[in-house]
Length: 176
Image (tube, rainbow, N blue to C red; front, side, top):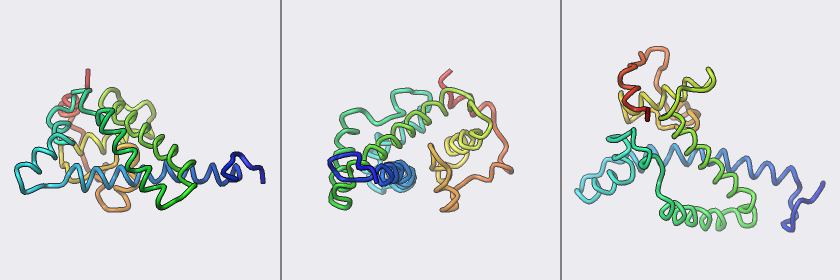
């Protein structure tokens, strides 16, 4: 096959490892959102940390400054992920990590869009509703933002056929 870099990977291997990085991001997003951001700490300091990490977004969903982790902590955390991935994947990290980071950027863009606009395509409405319901109905369900795959796999997906849309509560979640 055609070699695409000094790593000696074929174009197919590079593409597959890159795409696996994007896919692995969706799992990481779910795990972080469910088990870190929605952890219920018992200590006051734990509660403060949890609030700073994510609780403030639930309290102020219209605040554009609270949608993303600030740049410096993001870079530090990304560096940690890179290091762990390098230990596990070796040189495969070089096509994997850019895919993983693209997944993060897609997540950030989707999260912004979900709070800013109506879904641009009908097939995206379930993703929007899942996140809206996570905010105003039950925050221990609907953890996927860029994908609902893991909500389906782990049984935390809302039954969108049974859940009624509360237009007033959705308006409260939107920027404009």
